[in-house]
Length: 237
Image (cartoon, rainbow, N blue to C red):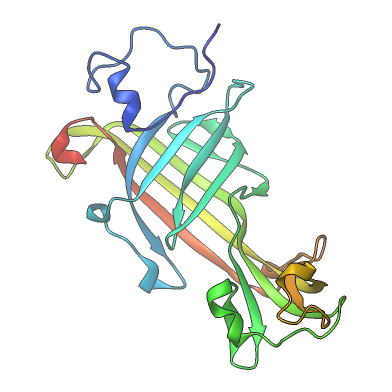
C-alpha cells in the first residue's frame, strides 16, 4: 500500500538505517516541507510565554491524508497548549503562507467568567464558578487558541546551526493565534451524582454553536517559531 502519511516522531528514526541520511524514496508530495523541527517560540503580546530552543518545543510538519502538494499539517504547542492545523499553502518552502484562517483541531482549553475574572475551566477550579440552579442557565467564557493564521514561513536548506553544532535546515513561522468568546450552559447531572437523590444538581458544559471570534476585538496573539530541522544526532535533542 502506498505510504501517504508522513509520521513524525522519535520512533520514525528506527525505520531508516540512519536519521542523519535522507531516505532514497518517499511518496510524500510535501517532502520539502516535512520534518521534525526544534524551535524557539516568541509571543509579541505576552513575552512570559516565550520559550528558548533548549526547552525542547518541537514543530512537526507533514502531509495530509490526501497527500496533496502544498497542503500540510503543522503541529506544535503554544504557551504549553497543543495545536494542530491544516494549511493550504501558496509559494514554496523558501517562502510560503496561507490565505485562510484555519481550525486548531486540538483547541480544548477554556476559561470561564467569574466574579474574580476569567478562570481556567477545570473540575479542580469548580469552587470558583457560580453554582447553576437549573438547566439552561448561561455563563460567559473563552475558548483558547481556537483558530490559526499562518502569515508566512521559510524553510531554508543548510542555513542553521543546531545547538549541537551541526549544519541543518532552518525553519521560521509567523502565526496569529485566535481566541473565541463562547458560553457555558447548565445541564442536569445524572441522578446518581446528586448528593441528595431528591435534589437535582447541575453542571456547566460548553454550549454548542456559541463561539464568536474574539479577534474582532483585537484579542489575538502573534507568534514566531524559529529553529531547525532535527538532525537525529543526540547532541541536538
